[in-house]
Image (cartoon, rainbow, N blue to C red):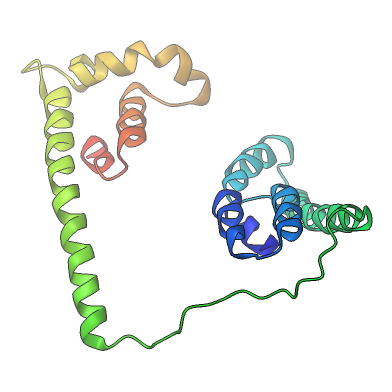
Length: 188
C-alpha cells in the first residue's frame, strides 16, 4: 500500500480497508503520509525552478522522492519495533476475479464515456467561448486593450507585469484557470 501513496495519499489510505489486521491497517495509515504524492510534484518543480536553475534541481527533485521513500521505510520499522503493530495474521488481500473484456464491452464503454464527456464539455465550451468572444470583442470598434478583456487585463497588470505577462495574456491565464479548454478561444 505504501507505493500507492506516491500516486495519491488519500486513495492509498482509503484502500487500506482491505487489510484484515487492524494493527497493520493503522501502521499503513501512519506510514503512507510520508510518501510524497504526485500533487507535491508541481510545488517541488516550482521551487526547483526558483531556487536551483541548473541541472542540480533535477537531482534535488529525485533526492526528495528517494528521501521520502527511505523515511517511510524507517518510520515503518520504528513503528513496527514498538510492538504495537505486531500482527500474527497473514497478509492476504482478496482480489476480484480478473477477466479479459471483450472488444464489444470496451467499445461500448469507450463510446459512453466519450459521449458523456463531449456532452458536458460542449455546453461548457460554448458558454465559455461565447463569454470570451464577448469580452474580447466589445465595446465595438475598440482596440484589443480597450475591450472588456483588455480592461480586465489592465486591472490585474500590477500583479502580472513583474512576471512579464501582458494584459491580454493575463486574461488568457484567468480564463485558462477556469477552463483550460476555453483558453484556446482567449489566445486566438
